[in-house]
Image (cartoon, rainbow, N blue to C red):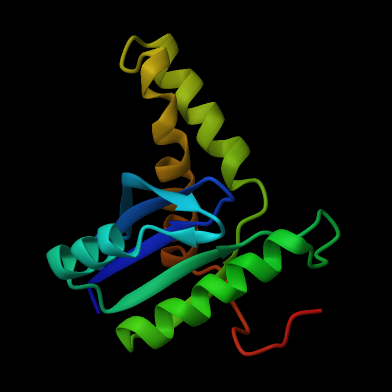
Length: 149
């Protein structure tokens, strides 16, 4: 396995990242708008066709104590839709603190003059990259077939 696509599922935007298992690296690609609870499937289809991933990684937002929440159910639903649509393995990864880490990375890049305020939309894609990096680094996959709580 070499190419994976990762997702940071949100209520308005879903961040998308590409990862490479050989180099254990990831980078943010883009954000996909979410309207009425549904992502822009045409854009996701284009990304899938362009990158031909072997595995899809979805961040599972958990509470600080590891419990599930409404956003967890949305991520699980999205993961199930991905599996059905593309017929690929879908892995759920604990995404706690990924958004904060993405914001820290953005602030550091902005401080170094590498990013501008208008680039803030890339934070969701960066969060997806962090989720992929965690998985590539050996983070445990969470059960994807556990029913919503």
